[in-house]
Image (cartoon, rainbow, N blue to C red; front, side, top):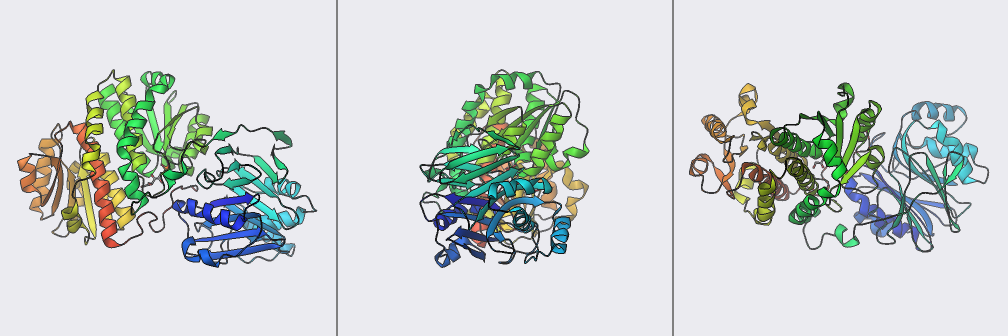
Length: 579
Ligand code: F6R
């Protein structure tokens, strides 16, 4: 979703902002803009991709702000792109988040003579500041913040000073502290090229940055915030010779799985708390919810601890059992639904944990205890290595709690991950790429893998794909089956095998072409399949996780063959910061 960058120092601010916005591109956007102080406020706004407009940006000045916009209020257009100015054009503002009471504020401002050019909620902010501004930008911003309802991370500049004033409530904002230069950004990625020293601003913080230094206020108080060190490497956010970030990130999975699994034992207190839990609830969205479902299955079947997954956006409508342990799972740590759910759980007295990939992200401020996945930055909108890292974390938790019952499965996954990444899925791509609808099916642990496979396919190839528990097909989805509705089935040796085979036969009887991910040497499954993808002969648990990587590759190669924008699929955002 929207991304913001601000720069104050000795370099050309527009260049730093543009490079920074390119680093935030992965979040998803439809238009962008930059403003610099040079010495008056100068603006550049455009729709579409930054790379296409790069050479047309000629803004001078060493103080500036930039923004990528993912439309919420008003269509994607130059007029609705940030930054926004006040009536005088002396102030410019970029904003990430949603101002919920903007309509009322806008009406009042219009009554007082302000004119608006856009349909956005953001535009009220510069007009409100204009009314308060009498030469001290920080004071003026502080005065208007109590009027804003909703979430925001904002950056404000004025032509009167070399200064950036920033405020945060509910939307992420990081301040990078370099040598005689400062960079604000929505996350650490735009900062990495300049410095690794950062401050994660807290909700309610107001930061005033000038060439003389920075001050952070919280209410009327000046506060000291701890500096943290960005762990990621600038090299991690380059494609490194791969055609897409998604492919690069998929190939990182063997390392990511091992790194994450081996780090889990570092937090024995959480593991004790989970072992003693009467019940566990996990809140998450999308791919993270699918990884959570893997955990729930393993926790219940291996450890016997009742575990449920509630979609974070639905959590507020459910009761939270007393003394429940609630774990929020989120790659970004910024998903608004997941943060809101964890806050509710905390208010209701649950013991709260989070599993995230991003150091210092908003979720880590809400949870009492944080576990990190060691996936490194994930740039592609489609989550791949973060899913595998979450699965690794969960498997290792279950392994430790159960006294080593998953040791073999974990070793098998580690052993075969590099191999399955090389599988040839071209015949399967041929079978699915022209379909209008695909059904993904599995049972037991393969059920969340089917859900995840279908999610990956639909988000990057735009082919409608649904994941089902194989037993559910007869309760409705069977009506969809025909020779033009391919089915992708995970059918592995183990407890689910006999019934899965029956299901494959039933679907075949309805003429559905079948892609079957089975165990190498399984002649029955191979015979029934139109395309058979042989997985190594491993446990059913290990095979299901390995199957998820093959399904990622199937989605990736299908999307490439259809020519979609693999890393930045239409309408999607990497970090979903609105509920
Ligand atoms: C799918 C995908 C999304 C995210 C979801 C939650 O590939 O990326 O479904 O998994 O938006 O995001 P996080 O994990 O950051 O909370």
